[in-house]
Image (cartoon, rainbow, N blue to C red):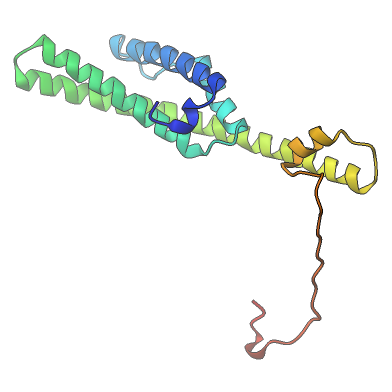
Length: 179
């Protein structure tokens, strides 16, 4: 809910809720069983790939990981505070959990950001290839489905179009700087 862009689409919210639920379970196992690393749930990978294909900035993935860490840490500290009146013991346990959780979430973040970047690169490559193909179809006068072409191009075709070609003669610039 703190990342507004992720909470507006119902499918994204559902994917986020599933990733969060499975992520909390994975982090709980990581802390409880003193594992070396957090096992990233499939729902988290799916969510990150979906965000990349929807054009969300990578900062959304990074921020969601930080918010997850903050929420888990807050919950751990609240539980610790109720377990003992020994402030020093609570503080020591809190520091240990914080260090372990930070290292674990950092590992998760690195992996998920890598998956995001790879998916985003693939998506952009495919999107650009689709756009190029639609433009070539239009310029060649081949029949197209206008609605599909408009969605692919992100541009309304049923309007006036203006094109301009500009060129200059090669001229010598004073000082030799051509910028």
